[in-house]
Image 1: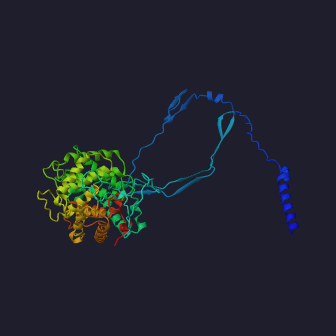
Image 2: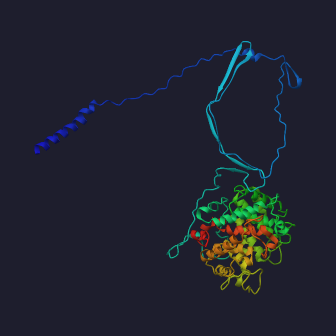
Image 3: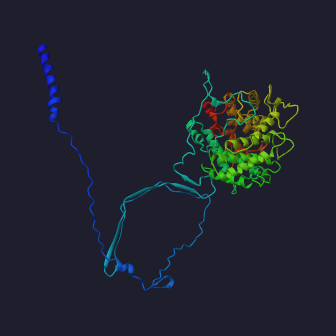
Length: 559
């Protein structure tokens, strides 16, 4: 056995020696490839015919149009003329081209036997290569309906890429040691610099357009109905005539601004969206009502004595329109409107119906503070002390000066004794909203007290008040947690169940019985109703930076 093992080892060693020592020398050396470029071969070019006679040839005379005779050496002027015709443009005519592919393969075009001179015929031949291209489908709306100027099958790229993700709150019962700074300071003061809460000015409406994927179909359907009604009832001059729809003429410009905000809250801008034409026409109509002194309104259709209401709401619309779709004309008009607000402030730090009045009120002041906040988000300059003075005035009109032991109740005007009792429900909610705008933490006693007062008066169709519902919806949404869930359930039930389902006013909300809608009419209630349901979409960009961290389950919980 040992002999066999030895023989095997010797054979293995011999095989390896042969492979590496002997057989290696018999292997072919690698081939070397040499590359060279062939010498170009000159081509012989011959002219078939002598060209000199053709170049020197001149006609002795030529007959032009209508019998005109040109002498030798002259060339007739050749004019391409067209007969102008008027083209009729039909309202609401939409021309849509389908996906079309045009393909041509080897088109041969030839002409034979062209006599140049007596020397003989010449042949001209041209062959094209294969060509294939696609025509993108285009939809053009030449009327005044709710559509883009031009629609493409594939949407245009985003104005800016999405660089953020939605944060979610800690789950109930989960112990966390740290709270991200993006959620804000929960005990921030009620006045000072502007806070971190932002309106979504991206103009994309990405979250809104993808709501069906997340299950909240009822809200999107309701908002679509409201926007459709608004689009159908816009005047040719871009305004929404309040007096035609159960309101008063004096509210026309303010209603137009609210309608534009409702469209923009759903992601439609002056450049993008199914209703971009409506937004563009509405903003242009507002621009036409800006006066030489930079104020907006004051006429028969734009506020009358209540100028600052129309001006502040229109300023919000202008600032938001510029923030969503940059247009220098909007920037100029918005800057002038903000400057007018600075000039209109009263001595007590607030605003009222007209500039420079003796006493302010919290209703007008809260609209103005919203306008300043939106201007700040759109990077429009103004004097920040003006903003802080407005918040100080709001504190003065709050129970116990918004200090220790305050219930959070807000009154209509300043009272020296500061005994506001239960306050005014709508103004209490408005005070909560502007304080949240300014960065006040949701655990501040003033906000907690206001939230409790608001929960004590839930939405009820028999006590219709869209003005109160608008402010309360935004204020309670920003509070987060149980306050958001409580109010969300009630406001959605009321709006879903009482939205008009059929007839001319399908999609709108009836203004009859609303304590303030006698002026704004159906446009007012429909725009505010849509804004209430858009609260999640309008503030989708702010949810990563506002005081109360949002819970995604809360946002989509209907019941």
